[in-house]
Image (cartoon, rainbow, N blue to C red):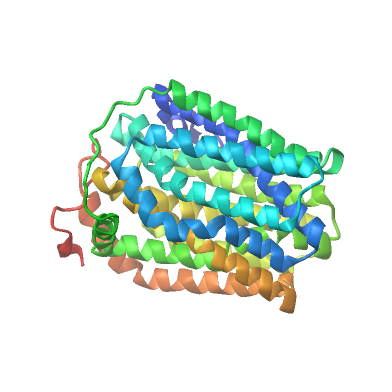
Length: 434
């Protein structure tokens, strides 16, 4: 069976043949809808209470900055301990944060400082949750050839929720208020907690080292540094985190001040980017393996910069929806391709730590972009701030493209393997890649 541009349904969803992955996928699906509902409602609540683009940046900064500082510890923890048990803790704490926020808003007691404190709390939880959850995927997918498909489906799930959640948030905010969005998110964690309890993942031997945590993290840094494609990918991700992703932070101000819209306008704008990202992940899920993805990265990154610039220059709601669709498609193609390449070539005993580097490069530096965008927008306006970020993204894509021939040459030996074993490993002496 085929759909779209000849994409086979069986190829897109082949990771579903693994029971544990199916449980995790559908449990996460329920929870992620609640997460996106809360994220949109929180941004709208902050701007409604304060009218400050700077505070939008401060809240985003508070949510994301723990990933940068706690990433080294989180990666080592993910490699040392049982990832399923760790996820039960992180998801349970996330549920508690959502319910606390719901209680404050529904009782009318919420203050901006409450939001900042709770944002720091959930940011700390997410700093551990992201590398643990990313590295847990391989434990649910027994066939190594399905790993890339599972990663793409995770991205598809995230962006399906990114479409549904903002639309739901727009409706709920305009009818019953932000508090019910937070309550729904808290309840949605029941799904993922139940799914995790039902998963029967094989018990893997964990390294019980007693040495300093920093030494173990440095080992992963050296491992990544000695393979230039990984460093280049992480560097471009950092550029996009700082300059590209703040368009989401500024979206409430753009919807209200530029388009003169309501919460529904905000929800539709966020959903259009989510639909574009979902379309991207369905394309990526249909790919057989990671071959050739390195060439897609600079094209997708450059396209994303141009789409953000076009969105910034548009004052038409219809055109904004179109350009945000393209932004979501190209950004997710860039991010998911980067994730797939890194997960494909990383050694299992370093997976948690390498994925913490990925999280630090993407989520960890994002708060600096969010804070800077909020501050700059207050001085030069939302549209000019978005144009400045778009220019940085295009510049980063061009630099990556100039280095592409050398990066492709370094990846050729890694992917020069039999098609039945599409997850090659780096050589035992990584120094030869430097």
